[in-house]
Structures are given as structure tokens and as C-alpha cells.
Image 1 (cartoon, rainbow, N blue to C red):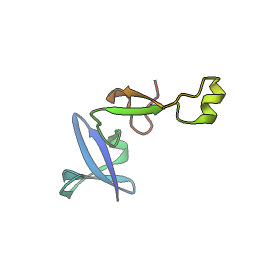
Image 2: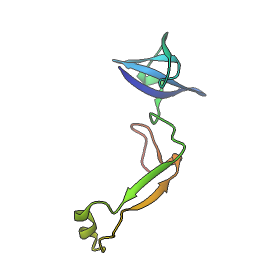
Image 3: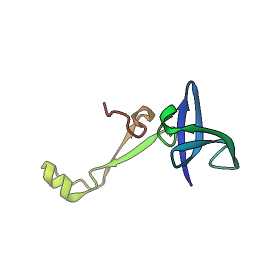
Image 4: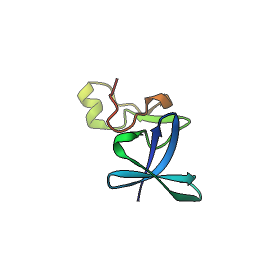
Length: 96
């Protein structure tokens, strides 16, 4: 089963992707859920990023070869940085 998060009109839902359509779920994919009989074709929905994180913590400068390619010094510890939740996009969304 493939879970997806999607938008139909002004509503955001989770669903189960089944071939050429998505069947809407009731409940939480992280707890109890029920697959409903409501289904949408892929052409009538907009697929979203699969989750909505509250924060995104990234690690940088953690690959020696990449650091050397950049000509940077190799740090004692990798760097950490944050990305906003708005940095997440869905499949086929343009990268801006």
C-alpha cells in the first residue's frame, strides 16, 4: 500500500494510491485509519509532500570527498542547520 497526502479543492487528505486513483483515508496513517469508498482519479488531485514536518534539521559537511571538492577545510564535527517546512514540495512540483 502506498500512502499519499493530497489536495482536492480546499481539502487536504491522506489516501491510498491504487493504480490510477487514490482512495481517501479516514483517521491517521500513524494510528488507526479506515480506507473509505471515496476515490479520486490522479488527474483531479494535487499530490503533496507526504508529511508536514514541524522542523527539519539537516547535517552538512559530512562527506569528506564533497568537502575536498569544495576546497573547504575538514571540520572536527559536521555542521547542522535548519530548513523551513515550506522547503518541502510534492512530486512534480517545481523547484524554485
